[in-house]
Amino acid sequence: MEKGLVSVDRWAEGSQVYFLTHLHSDHTQGLSSTWSHGPLYCSPLTAKLLPFKFPDFNLSLLRILHVHTTSIITLPSTTILVTALDACHCPGSLMLLFRGDFGPVLYTGDFRWEPNCHKATLARNVLCHALHDIDGVDVVYLDNTYSNPIYDFPPRHAATQQIIDIIASHPDHDVIISFNNLGKEDLLVEISRVLKIKIWVWPERLRTMHLLGFRDIFTKDTLLTRVRAVPQYSFSIETLEALNRIKCPTIGIMPSGLPWMKKSLRKSEAKVDNQVGCIGSPEKIHQYIYTVPYSDHSNFEEMEDFIKLVQPNRLEGIVSSSSCYIEPMYYFGRLCRGNPPMRQLHNRLKRKESGTRVEAVSGKASFGGVNYESDRGKGKTSRRKFFGVRVSRFGLSRKKHRGARIQGFAKRKPTIQVRPSLDASSLTVGGEEDDARGVGSGSDLFSLAVGE
Ligand SMILES: [Zn+2]
Image 1 (cartoon, rainbow, N blue to C red):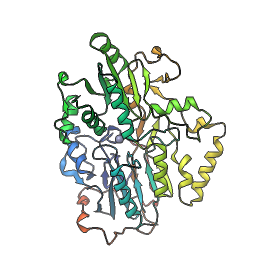
Image 2 (cartoon, rainbow, N blue to C red):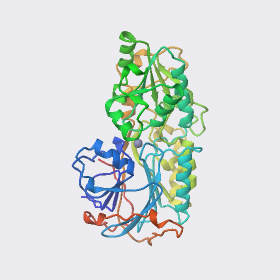
Image 3 (cartoon, rainbow, N blue to C red):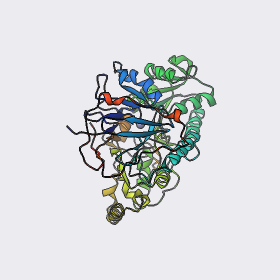
Image 4 (cartoon, rainbow, N blue to C red):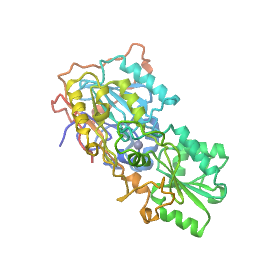
């Protein structure tokens, strides 16, 4: 069994302590109602929602990390400091800064820190405060979902307005919007506020909304509204065609950053190093379906700003596969601190780029195995391309999360320290030593392995 010190979004046995950044299913693979490998740290909101995803979970294992505070966690073999930051991704999502014998490590989880977002600004300030105390971050485990310059989509508030405009311009249509089990709540709330309309959600989602404190906006009565948020698995071409055939005129809206990649590749296969212009307007990919670039992940430019801020020695992607996977060091290695091996890697990758960009960027986007092609410029929907394909499968198959396991010590001098100005009341002490026995292997490296 692989022994480790800290596991983040990885649930195999053998670590002394576990961290859950948020409750999206690609981060909980291996976690279950009967999981009991050790203490599990998460945000208060995640702890509140977790029992509904895993009904018989042993709640005594849960430990709370309050946002924008630093916790001291005593393990059998060492002590670590963990600073929890708001990842601005979905309710309860955290970014985690670890400090200990292993050196500073930042695990972003899924995150979106937009430039003018108040919550992101707060989180950024807390991170800067913490970074001030340490001699640089060794490794950033990065949400590399969109670590490619072809991903150029707007802030969420702009995409929200686009969706509102689409709905308002179809006053006689029913509207279905593809949604996950968690996330993008602000989008629905804003639609409801601006259009003065309730939103239908499915029963499980309604329960989540109530847990999140949204009481009056959402309904499960279809007679009360023409706007419905539906689960991704039921959002399909067949569904929309059937609704239009037998019920009433209906359009579908798919909020996601992902479709905005393929279009860019088609427009500019040879210009991957250049921004390919504004691609942030709604796109009609089918007679009844719009995609809007609303994403809870950072776009390339936001990621670049983030790496400039942190300037780590090294980057590791937390997404092991996606329709457009790219090694984060490829574009961001130049922003890492003066680490010759890393610069060499970046330069080597850049040299490979000439004429062989596809080796670094897989441009095959697909809807459940069927190639996706935008209809922009064709003037007509290519029905055959989409027939029988669940659009939702695009999202489900787009990435595989792999988490991180931190293990070993300790050639590096411990760097744990707390700023004197840090409010002592913000420190929490965990009781995790009861369960964990997986002592570090003696390696002086962090290890990252593909998750379950
Ligand atoms: Zn997520």
